[in-house]
Image (cartoon, rainbow, N blue to C red; front, top):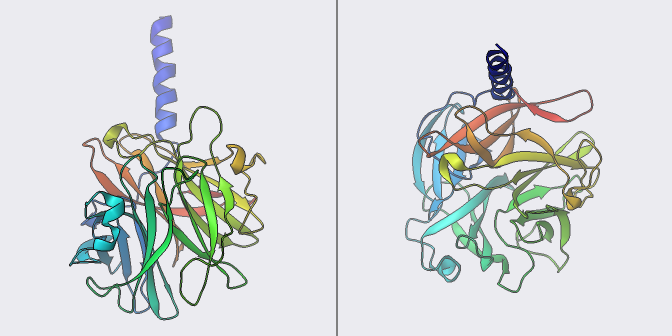
Length: 314
């Protein structure tokens, strides 16, 4: 009898855990993506960029149905090959629209290495083949204490441009950019977040300003292992774009702090590499996750904010 009772308790506990997060919203069409970033187009619709050979592009009219739209660099990006070991695969793009142009920051590296670089390209249309490369923003090498991948542009309330980036090693960083060029300005490097204890597994920073707070979204643990991936989305906030960022409990994100926003549940494995889009109906959280078959898919959920101003998915 007690074994049956224990089984019921465990089943209820597992069911409660699986129900802790909502399923992703329905998406259709070309939905196999890794490291998605998305922007609303001035004329309507959405443009999404993601990891792939020469940066893969997708479009949607309604945020639900997606179609392939080619690649940013159909003729290749030979200027990146010194960092990719000759591969055409370019990682973790960040896409936004400013001053009548689309800005695309993207990473060149190989798995497990910090011989890495972030580059910038711009386009007036966002279409495949229309992107003009503007060169190197920042690079790291094997003697660096951090890793130049996973870029994200944030323009603060004063109109200053900043690029957050980073993966593993000593965590996530922030550097100032020149708004006139989109390239690095000066030599300052600010610490945003890092893991403490037995792992340095933190990456994919994304900063947005809502109300009085800058929110820093990050991915903890490991991606790229299919259904065995353990990625999860964490968040902290700060009154200043440069930090310090703290979690709901007041722990500094530079000391391992972070409040969990989204983790694996049911057949949703390793959700992460998140991006936040302000849209009709409120903020939307974009991310990738792995299905039971190990393929990376596009995930989208609504973001809400509780009475204390902390985000949650619904």
